[in-house]
Each structure stands twice: as structure tokens, then as C-alpha cells.
Image 1 (cartoon, rainbow, N blue to C red):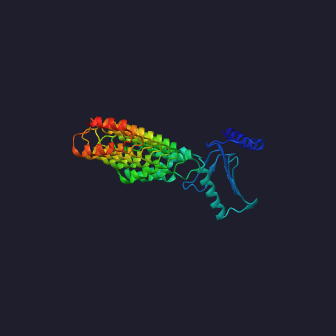
Image 2 (tube, one colour):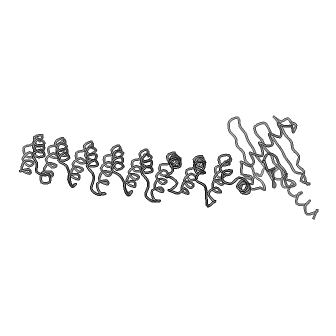
Length: 400
């Protein structure tokens, strides 16, 4: 048995020497061996290990290294070498700018820092996560998120947090803070999707959740997350307003229109919310998108006086008379149009750029407008704006 143990240890030492001589490096994160190097301006950090390494409970010093194993750490000009001989006894060497230094209190602090860096590099990650959870639960795991060297390692800790079936609501603010600190949109989105819609009724949770969504790096990801929330069921007014606000700041009109239409599909949408979306639509970059959004609102059913007036106002600001005429004709198909609204449309017709467009719209209005002195007077006044005798005649014959 002793001979077998000795041979294994000897082989480990031989392999270590061979690999270092031939320059072969391994970049894994296992407990057997691994390397990590970080280099930037005036900064160099290297971590290398081989063998199974164990730390004390406080993770400040090395308790054991399998025979023939080692742990090497370099931070700029400071170096630590911890090696295990064939009997498993650990020897330490510390260097500062190439000069060997004593293993005093400062040296032990450097060892503690080196141990922390090795752990942050992913050494013994799965086992350590379980140890931390057993000792301190979800809070202890959450406190480790953000301290790891790489995004995937931080994600491992978060995944262990969400592996628990029950999580007290009071943990959610910290959970969301940690989700927001993750490095990639995909990681953030994966964990955001695990939060139930009902939790967003809490104002603090809702604000933290949508703050992360608003800061995602890609608009498609923002839209996907907002749609995910809406697909879970009817949303409250506060959530509607938060989604509408983020949608307004998306980078492309296509994404905005897509989200506005999704919002308009919500049940129990209020007049104020529809008006807010129309106001957003009025700021879209092209008339085609504005017209598309106004027609989409009207296709959802009868519109209120407030919505009618908003659409009429936006239509008046469109860049081409063709689009204006198209929208005015759509508006006068609405039921229960008030006298003031008829007169507003008639006035809009008189301000079109060409006699042909004026007469076309007024002739379209004539058989649909209700009888009434004020409306007829507005119609006759609009007809006076037509210079062409032929077009004027068509408009007057339509009303008589």
C-alpha cells in the first residue's frame, strides 16, 4: 500500500516537472489542475495549481495539498509558491520583486489573498457552493455573487439560489440587485424569467425588475422581457405604464410599434393608457407608422371623444395630404361624432393643400354629416377655400 502511494506521488511530481518544462498549460477549473492569467496595464495576476487543495473553514490558508501538488500565485512583483512533498507536507516560499521574504504577518495576509483569488477563479466551485448554502443559506450564496472572477461562476451561485423551491419575498430586492450585476443580457433575462408576475405588485420589486430590463444592452432583449411579463396574464396599471415608458425609449420605430400594439391588446386598457400610446405614436419617425398606429387603435372598437380628438390632432400634423384625407375618412366612419368634431374635420378639409383634395374630402363628408346650421355653415365656409370652379361646383352640389 505504501509503495502504491509512493508511486502515485512520484508520478504526480514527474508530470508536474514535465509539463512545466515542455510548456504545456491547462486552462480548466477542476480541482486537479488549472491556470488563470489576467494582464493589463501595470497589472499581472497569475494563478496555477495542481492536485487537490483544501482550505481552512475561513478560507484564509491552505490546510492540505495532495503529495506532489502545488499552488502558485503571482500579483505583479509578489509571488507565492506552496508545494507539497511526497509526504504531503507543505512548504511556502514568498517573493517580492524577486527577493525571497519571510513568512510573517504580511506574508500570511498575502497567502490569504492568494487563497481568495484561487476560490474566485472557480476552484472547488460546486462543492464550495454547497458548503456555503449549508452554512448560511440563500443569503450567504447571494453575498458571493459578484465576487467571482468570471460571469459563469457568478451565474452558478445564482442558479443554486433559484434551485430552492421557496424563497422569502424579503430576499427579492437583494436577488434583483445581484441579477442586475451579472455580465450578460442572457444571464439577467434567464433569472428575471424566474420571478413570478405576482411579485411585481410590490413597488420595490417592480421598480428593481424594470430597472434591469431598461438597462439591457439590446432592444430586442428589452422587448422580449416586457412581452414575457405581459404573456403571464393581465398586468396592472403601474406595470402597463412602466412597459409603455421603456417602449417609448427603444431605438427603432419597428420595436416601438410592436410593443405599442402588444400593449393595446391588454384587457381593461384605460382611455388614459390608449391616449398615452397615441401620444407616443405621434412622435414616431414616419407618417406610415403614425397612420398604422392610429388605425390599429380605431380597429379595436368604438373610440371615445378624447381618443377621437387625439387622432384628429395627429392626423392634422401628417406630412402628406393623402395620409390626412385617409385618416379623416376613417374618422367620419365613427359613430356618435359630436358637432364640434364634425366641424373640426370640415375645417381640416379646408386647410388641405390642393382643391382636388379639399373637394374630394368635402364631397365624402356631405352625405354623412348630420343636419344642423352650425355644421352646414362650417361646410359652406370650407367650400369658399376652393379656387377651382369645377371643384367648388362638386362640393356645393353634394350638400344641396
